[in-house]
Image (tube, rainbow, N blue to C red):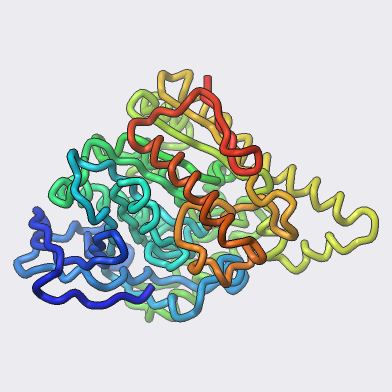
Length: 449
C-alpha cells in the first residue's frame, strides 16, 4: 500500500497525551500509521510508550513482529514476500479516521489480526481498514502484537506467559488514553478479531486490567474448541523452548520455534494451533474458573460471535495429504465434505454457540452469525478467512488471493459494503435486529438466548 509523504504544510496533526502525531491523507481518510505504543524486551512484559517530546511522524506502516512465513497461507491470502519485514522490541499500531467533519465522537473499532498466533500483521494490504473507516464513519485501529515463541509460550525459565495478550492490553490503554484527541469515543470501543484474533478478543474479556478499555467484541471464527486442556502440550513445548536464551539471535529463535511446534505433535487437533493463551498465568484465571469468569464478564460486553459454513476447508486445501483425499473416485468428495463439517463443528461452531448462550444466560447481549458466502466455490467454499476480503482491503488488495480467485470485483465491492455496514452497525451501539440476513449466500444472524 504505497503512499506519498505529506508536506509540512498540509499534514494532519493531532495533539494527544502521547504527543503531537503527524499523519497523512489517503483517499478520504486520515491515516496515522506505525505509532509505537509500547516497547518490549524479549520474554518480558511490554512497557507502555511514554509521551513523546518530539512530534511523532506517523507516516510509515507498522512493521510486523518476528514470524516464520507460511507459504500456503501466503498463497491463499495473496500476501507477497516484500510485506514480511519485521522488527523485535517495538510494538506499533495504525489508525484510520474519516477525513470529514464529525458532529460527535466516532465509534472506535480495534482490529486484531489472526494467524494461529504465529503469523500476520496489522498493516498487510489485505487487512487494509480504510474502506471500513471511510464507508461507515468509524475510527479503526489496527494493532500488532508478539507472536509464537516470543508472544504465546511462557511459564518456564521465569518467563511470563500470554505476552501477546499483554501487548494487546497495552494497545487498548493507548487507545483509551489518546483516541478522544483523534475524534474517537473511548467509551465506545469494539474489538473485532479473526481466528486467533477472535480468540484473543474473547480472552481479553476475562483478562485482568481491561476494565473500561472496550465495550463490545466481534469474535470471528475463533478456534475456541481447542483452547482448553493444553497444559501438557505447553509443558512439552516449554522444555524444548528452554534452550532458547534471552540473547539468542533472532533467526535462531525462529528456527527453534519450528522445533517447539514439532514438540507439540500428538495432542490431536490442538497440535494444529500449538501456541495460544495459557490459563492460570497472568492476566488469565485458572482453567477451572474461566466459565465463571466469562459469566461474570457477560453484563459488561456486547458480543457478536460466529463462524463460516465450511471453516476447515481452508486447511484441507493447504494440506497436500488431505487434498489427496478429495481425488479418490466416488468417495473422495463425500468424505471431504464430512470431514470439513465434523471439524468445523468441533473447533468453531459448537463452542461459538456455547459461548453465546452462556453469555446471554449470564445477562449479556449476544448475537451469533453464520457466514455462507463462497459456498460452492471450489476448492475453498465458505472457508476460514473467507469474510476477510469482504471486511478489509479492496478488490485490488486481494487480486493474488487464491480464496477469491475468479470472484468478480463487483461481488467483492457490493457484498463487502453490506458486511462492513453490519459489523459497524453492531459497533455503534451493540444492537442488531433479533434475526436477519444479508442475502442467503452472505451471512445470517440471530440473537442468543
